[in-house]
Each structure stands twice: as structure tokens, then as C-alpha cells.
Image 1 (cartoon, rainbow, N blue to C red):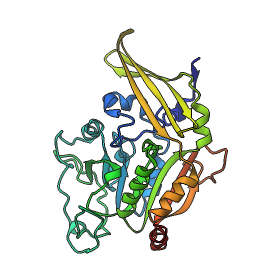
Image 2: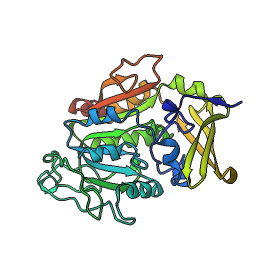
Image 3: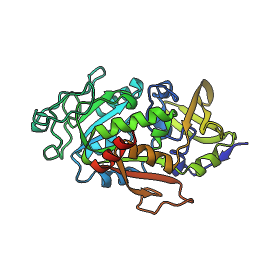
Image 4: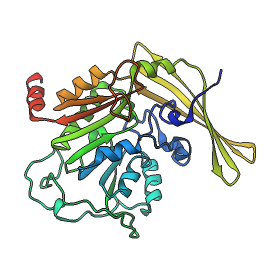
Length: 331
């Protein structure tokens, strides 16, 4: 059976359940489809929310950023962005989209008083001390130098081993991407790394799906995502299926890609996926252990109250010393 869905939302409901990047385990190896990813995953219904969320924040980190779906609109707004993903193939697409030459390490050297030594507080093992927590005014214009915009740093790194040598006042993981970390201990490790990279009272925001909603779609049925124009007479058809395991709490499945040229099938690809179903109680407990206090939960990309009927579970945490003390006592 093939079931059709409204395309506005389906971009974030497709089989992997996320529009972000990959982690060390490569439960979803997006590098296999990096060249066609943006054709079927390029939705923007949450961009306005993130633009609003970023107001007043000077240093922003997006983790599991993929090809820059969320980061690029923020870069164009003039925000100082650091963008991290494990997939070098996805980051290559990101770089190409904003005009950064391939092979440019972490984009360009960042300069200015905000990167000068002065803060003795270190982030963790292997980190670089001496990074001030606050930065100067944002550059409201996007640089068009041969090396691409100057207000972005792109880093290939695993979120579970995050070590950037600086702190941020806002860290985001959009699009359910954190659920790609299927191992619970690795999720704890990732949250600890995130907390270490936040300034005091810094904000961490992540998006998850309502667990019951996600499980309701993981019924083994093949679903049609859409048909997409690749240009030059080529088109892409994407279908997928998901299956939920109550024993493991993991959703697994596959995405299927068919590439046609002038109506003739030319190529087939398959992407296996696996991600965790995460409850609000579980993520909040792990975050609290890492020193992150829950401030708000939204049921959508508007400030709607979260309840059992909500599709999304958007969580906003703040790094607080009180949570850090609780965390140390529990350990």
C-alpha cells in the first residue's frame, strides 16, 4: 500500500525523521545521498521560528547541520554561525551552496576581539582556553569574498565528541536529528558536550517528534514521499518505510530513491535508517544530568503548548549552575 501525505510537513516526517546530519555510528549515512538530498528535504516551515529564536544571540552553533538547510538563512541574516556535522559529503554540499572552496578547512580564520584570549574557563579535555564568552556586534552584511561568507565556520565533527574550543550563547539541533544517536549513553555524552560549549545561562534548543505520533507512522507500510525535478530532464522519486521495535525503542527502515532521465529509470539507491524514539521524560532527565534546565516545551514552531496531540516536541534548555550542582551530586 502506498499512502500520500501533505508535502508541507512531509519533509520532516520522512523515514529518517530528520533533516540534519549524521553521527559517528552512521546510523543514517547521508553521504550516500548528499548530491540529491536538498531536492527532497528542502523545507522551510521552521526557518521563521529559528530566525526569531536567534535574535539577541551573538554566537550560534548548529549541530548535525547537514547541508545547511537551517544555517544558511541565519548566515544570510548576519548571525555568527558555527556549523557541525559528521558527514563530510553533506558539508561539501553546504560549502558549495555558500561559495566556500572545497577543501577549505573550517572555512576561514576567524578574527576580531571576540576570539582574543582573556577567558580562563576551559570547555573540556583537548579544548582551547582563552575564548571569551561574548562577542561583539553582529556583521549584518554577508561577506562575498572568494572564501565565502566570513560569519560562518564549518566543522566536520561528531556531536558525541564535540570539542570546538569556544562557547556559544545558543546551540540548536533542529529536525529531530538528535534521535539519530540511538545509544542512550552516547546521547548523555552528547548532552554533556553541548552543556560544556554553552555560556553561562546559554540556551540549547532541540526538536523531537511526539513519540506516539512517530510510532504511529512506523507500521511497515511503504509511503510515497514525492517526485522531484532534478533538472536536465531528470527526476527523483522517493518512497520509504519504517518499523518500530517496542523491545529496543528504535525505529528502523529504508528510503528508496529512483532517478529517471526523460522517463526512463537510470539509477536506484537505498538508504537504511535507524533512530531512537525519545520521550520528554528521558531527554529532560539526561539534560538535567548534564547541567541543562528545561525552560519551555512547544508543540509546534509557534509558542503552542505541548500536549499528547502535538506533532512536535520542541525543547528549550538553559545551562544553569544549579543544574550542574544537582548533576554532580547524582554522579
